[in-house]
Length: 89
Image (cartoon, rainbow, N blue to C red; front, side):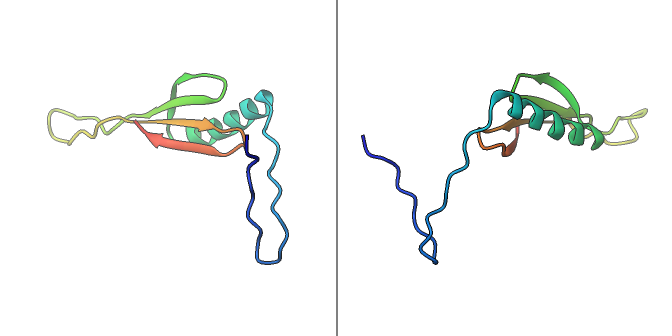
């Protein structure tokens, strides 16, 4: 099996890959991201150790006068390097 090759930078020094985060570290990072999302108006619909589905409610319709935006749903996950990935559902 071939070993992965990391390309050299312009100064000739090879970048060092960060070790993967532990599950506890990923859980903590997700909690931080979710705290921010809740402050932005999202609600947590469901959650696992490293991923959560978030929803934010659209505008309400009152007596048919105001338009109604659909709810916005997205999933946020934390990868092994601690990076948050958010994508719409």
